[in-house]
Each structure stands twice: as structure tokens, then as C-alpha cells.
Length: 551
Image (cartoon, rainbow, N blue to C red; front, side):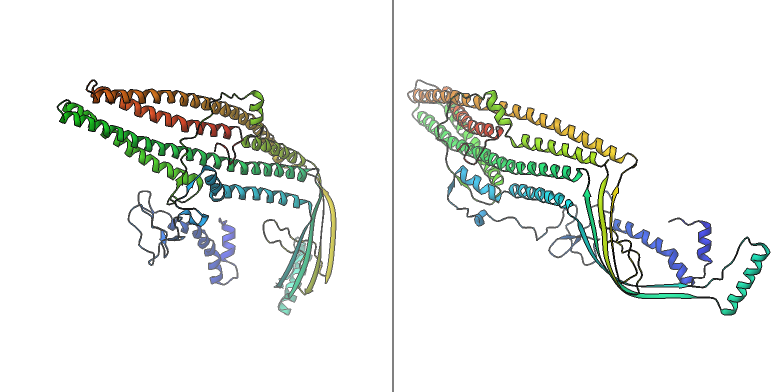
């Protein structure tokens, strides 16, 4: 606040008491310090830890630390909030310990327990409420207000004066000053209390289609939100499916490595027996022990991967990581190796039903409606307004101020006990400094961007569908080839082992064939589950993934 020398001299030389003038000067200074006091709650230095204000239970509360604040850990470690709890295992959902769950069962649990579905549901409900809010703009607005108060006014009776009157004005001023001095000054005061009850009406009757365009935009936005609700469920189904197959692949790798460890121990025992019989060498035994150790190492790593994939599956479902989960063994199910290619018509059908494409299309239509709403701002509006008021007591007001940012004041009140007013009119925008034109340009740019987004989404969808189709065919071909490779590697391992036991083979050949057989088994297993994941990816890419897909 800046004071000019003239204003400051008037304040100092006024007839107010000294204490009143002092408070008048100090109040702005006191108020200006309130905002900067909040810096006391921020970190004091950029190179020092923040000292939070901690309540009972470790919860961080606003304000700076007080003498009664709990002791916090030193350094940059924050206190533990005892009100934050880790979710217990999923017993509350009827989760059965010891039951081997199928993919469809886990998907059903995920659709009810995953937080993404609830968030998508709430967004869809909010979009529906937004449509209802915009439709309510067609209805009038009624506001009831009751105001009670007390007013007081006083005239200190300064004597009137006439300026620029020459000698006649000076004579009249002298006479009035003498009369005022004789009467001790004329002082008028008036006070009164009362109550005013008002009922206000506001009604926009016609706006050349602006509300209609806004409603159309919100309805398209609601459609897009409902589409995204379906998309959220499809994404959860896909995430659970891929996590389920990934975990099954990790489990099968562990089982295969157990089998490979048994084979390595068998070869090691054969090498040790030949050494005791004087037919083998210590080098053969050492090579066999090395192969066993390598297999055991890979087994330990695979068991760690199995535990991690189990956590990923629980996270995709939306369950606590502490939940003990058992799944069905799906390793023996046959795969269809038929070469099915998607035609252009199938790709067109798939793209036109994908949730992201449909949502982008709805957003583009909403953007066009917002352009129509922006254009209607250049046209007149027809409105009606009015109020009914009842006044008691001696409180005289010409208006009642509105409360809140959107509440208008009630104007044109009468001092009579009962008054009413109804007005109708038309308002025409003439000049606003180019604001409406800028808003229209923004709406047109956003509509153009929405159209571009639709085309980009379509192109990305086609790319994803084609890539998923290629991945499926590649994985099926890899599965067929790995099956042949596993058969050949198994034959070679058995032959080299038998030859070594009969004394006509070497440990080097056994080790080579053993590693080749293990790699072939793992490749065959990985190709099997990769084909299942590729099939789920193609179904997800075509927008046809459902709860029973790929089971």
C-alpha cells in the first residue's frame, strides 16, 4: 500500500484520536506479514533436512514443529504413519487357500478388486452427472435470501458555504457561520433495524444454441468415458492374462530345471562310478560336477523369477502381495497351428470397435460441438429476471449482496413492506477485446487436433493389430520348430549318455548334449507360453478380448 504525502498529512492531522490513527497505519503492515509467515513451515535450507510437524501416531500435520512435536528420525528419513496399513491377504474376497485357480476365476476376481475398475466407474458416473448439470441450465434459477441488520448514519452539521459569490457570498457565509455557532451546529442522525426476505429469479430463455452445443459436447464426453470404462476392463483382462501365462511359464521353467538337475546328477553319478571302476578320469567327474552346479544355479534363478511373476500376477489382479496363490497347470494343452490371416475387412471391423478409436472419435465430435458453442457467443441472448421482497422494520436497502462467486445481488428493492419486480430483456455482445474470437480459434484448433488424433489412433491400431498377428504366427512357428528341436536334443542326450556308460563315448559329448537338451526344453516351453501371450495380444489388439478369451 502506497500513501501520497497529501493523504499521509491528512491522516496525521485528522481529528481522530492518536491511538486510532496508529492502528490505521499499522494494520496494513501487520496484514502484509501474514502471508510470509508460512515460510516457517517450509524447509529452512536447501542442504538441510525438513523438520516436519508430527502428531501422535506419526501423522504429518500442517504447521511448523512445536516443542511437543514427536521426535523424528535424523536425516532424510520420514516418520512412519501408523494410520497407513498394508492390506491383509485376500480372505475377505473369498480367496481359498490351497485352491488352484484358473485364468477365468482370477479375471473375475480382478474385475471386482482391481482399483482401476472403480476409478473408471467413478469417472463414468462423473461424466453422467456432468451431462445432468449442463441440462439443468435450461431451467430457471431461484434464490431465497433472508437479511437482517442494523444501520446508523450521522451528519456532523458542517455549516454550508458559498464560493465564488463575491461580496454577497462572503456576507451569506458570515451569516451562516454565525447562525451555526449560535445553534451549536446542526447534527442529524438516523438508525434502524429490520429484516428483508427476497426470492430472486434468473432465467435464460434463448441463447441461439449454445446450451444445446454444450450438452452435445458433454454427452459425447460421457460416451467416451463409458468406452474407457470398457477399455479399463479389457486392459485388466489382458494384464491378468499375460501375467498368468508369464507366471505359468516361470513355473514350467522351474519344473524343467528340476528335471535337468536330475539328469545332471545322473550323469555325475555315472562319471563317479566309471572312476571307481578304473574306466573314467577325474576330469570327467569334474566336468559332470560343473554341469550339475550350473544347472542348480539356473534353478535358483528360475525359482526367484517364479516368485516375482507371482507378485506381478497378484498386482495385476489387485490383491495383496501377501496372498498365497496357486494356479492351474496349463502346460499340457495343445495349440492350434492353423495359419489364419486377418483380411482387410476383419482389420476394418477390429479397428472400428477398439475402445481407444471409439473414444477418440467421441472426443472429436465433442470438440465440434464446442466450436458451435463458441460461435453462439457472438449472438444475442434473451433473458428474464425478477424478485419478490418483503421488508420489516426500518432497514432501508436498495439491494441485497449475493453470497458466493456465482450468486448475483438482488437489486431494485423497495422500502415498502412488499415489492415485486419482473424484467425481460435481450443482451447483445458488441466488443470484448477479441476474447470471443480467440476462444473460437482455440475451439477450432482443438477440433482439428481431435480429428488428427482420431487418424493417428486408427493408424496406431492397425499397426498394433498387424504386429500382434505377426507375433502370433512367429510364435506358433517357433513352437513347432522348438518341438522338433527338443525331440532331436533328447535323442542326442540319451545316445551320448548311453555311449558314455558303455565306454565308447566321452564326457565332453555328454556335456554338450546335456546343455543342448536343456536349452531345447526351455526354448520349447518359452515358445508355448509366448504363443498363448501372442494370442491374447491379438485378441486385445482387435478389441475382442473377453473374460473367456484364450482359456
